[in-house]
Length: 283
Image 1: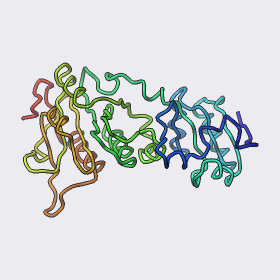
Image 2 (image 1 turned 30 degrees about the horizontal axis):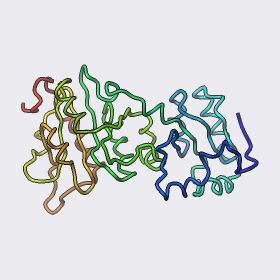
Image 3 (image 1 turned 60 degrees about the vertical axis):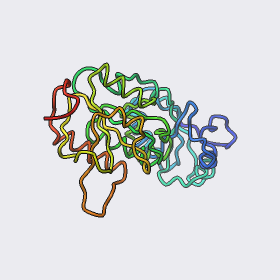
Image 4 (image 1 turned 180 degrees about the vertical axis):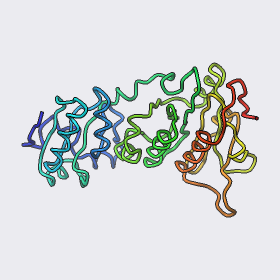
């Protein structure tokens, strides 16, 4: 399905045209499509049947794109091909990776709560409360993938996880870790009340328990908060426990994605497991 680009006015290229200019005014893809950048991300897109609408590639990347299409049995995805400098002129930014792709948001945004937060059996779920930085929201997906989170709840005022640079920061895991946008306080309340989840909030202030003392429950949500304000009072009210990461004197906090990684590592490998019926997490 190779298509040589003859004109930037081709309507089939509308999703790629002047991406940088659109991003500057905040049009970051909350429509029906998203943009993935680089071969690693494109491969993750191709692994999801029906997710990839088309690919725009510099000539130097064509052989690699062909190999990915063959590997994932996606021979009918349109591939628009042009010279390197023309790709950059079309998109409005430097294409160091030489390839981008357009994807269908509906494939990723149509998940049910059960897919993100299983209601039977053991489950570890990550929740983001007001995480506003595009790189941080991407890195949190990478945390979830690394430490076996079943899914990610995206609260209000979080940055779009399918923004091009967020997907890149996630190393493409925003496409493979199931997520769902939600009103976080009410969703946490329902998971606690109806499905036996306990909720652990991560904070960096007195009154919380040190992370090493926290024990994992059978079904647990870990909440990370806004980069400056932390977890909102509404979300904190739904937390069964609050935990902090002990650090050297004079160091008051970690980047939100780093704190999320440390917390998930403890729960995945060192926090033990308790029955669902003990939401307090006490041994």
